[in-house]
Image 1 (cartoon, rainbow, N blue to C red):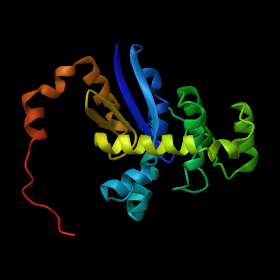
Image 2: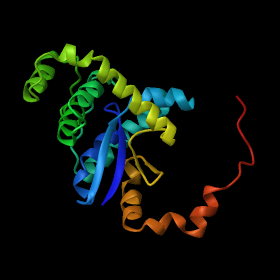
Image 3: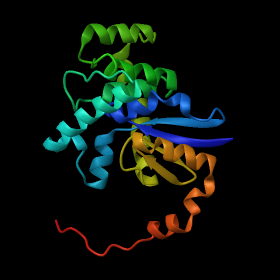
Image 4: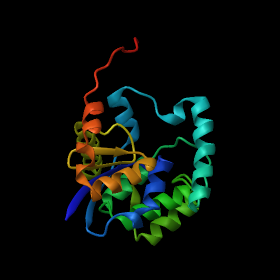
Length: 210
């Protein structure tokens, strides 16, 4: 039985797209879901998120709308983006990183267009998840530490963005890498192809100056 880690953040609509295609994963694949704060990874690697570059932000929002429509994935952007994903990340962590819970949280944001600031929908979501004292849960030291641990583990593995699957020490980043990930699961020798090996070791001929 193969295993993989899946690193994601609710701030990422691309993570939502992968979650909506979960049925495509092999039934014998065990996936450990790891919520991470994307902002922490961006800080670690010293680069901006795609939504922090104004022209790129407009493009990716339009492209996402088109991609999801093409793939039959419902998409409704929340009222603001980027937003603070910590309540969602901590809630997922506190509830055991269960994929069914994670899917409900993703759909709350990206299918229904809500944020935790939307008090009535947020309360309805919490009621459906049988969460009584959410503030105590979200402020739990253990929950906060576990989320930090996920981020540190992700960075140590080389994870630089979300969504990312990690298996056998190999990273598969982005919703558009899902087919690549699935094919590599079917054929583990794919990455041992001579050309794959050669390009993995290419030297840098030039580096951008700060």
